[in-house]
Length: 311
Image (cartoon, rainbow, N blue to C red):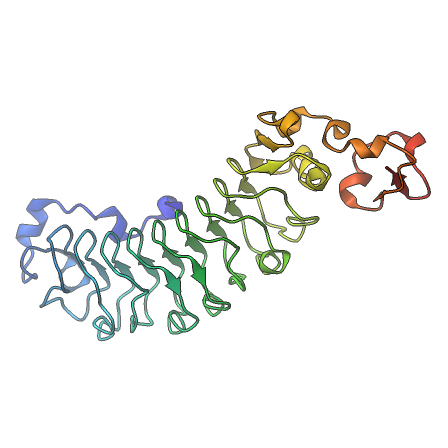
């Protein structure tokens, strides 16, 4: 996960040494408690409900790999809870009534299908949220907007068809890989002024709109692999952007269309191969030379026609 470089105590100690567990008491039956009253691990116990006797002073709680279906409002009394893992359970929706003190929340591999606009409204202290490998098809507009401290968000392996709207500007890491996203919406991209790492590989992107990445000044790593790239004129912005070489990223993007360019690497193609109409004058259709994606491609001077190319 993206926070491996600054792992939380809950993640590091997800497997508890038996010797340490035996020395610490009291502790809910079958659970492992480190730092009495602070870190409680109740993983892989077949639980269908939250364990009893968890101290209210607990700051880190993991009930991962159980059979929990609903924990709504059951964790609200844990006013100092900062790290919570509910991963690998059977939750059908985002849990309600979570304590506002939460900073790290892991919900990967559940059965969540929607994120409603009010689901996270009290979680303003969240810095990391993992919703990987659920069944999320939709996130209501502004559902994540109030998370002003959120830095790491993983929505990998869901069923999203578009970029979530109004993502918080605080994000530095966003993983949308392995979804069904077919386009990058500029309005959804524009707030991400602090984004550093962006993963949108294994989606259904066919092109990238003009200036899609130009408003992301801190971006340093992008993964665009395994999409459905159509290597025609509309992809020239992405082509130029890749050639700039300013970012750490894989550049081996493979064309799926048109048929005669299928399976070819985008950056192995020439501008003319991608957009033949640039060199086909007197056909009537015009290409705007003022577009940034064309201005920097060094198209021969003798094809310039008062700021335009004719097809």
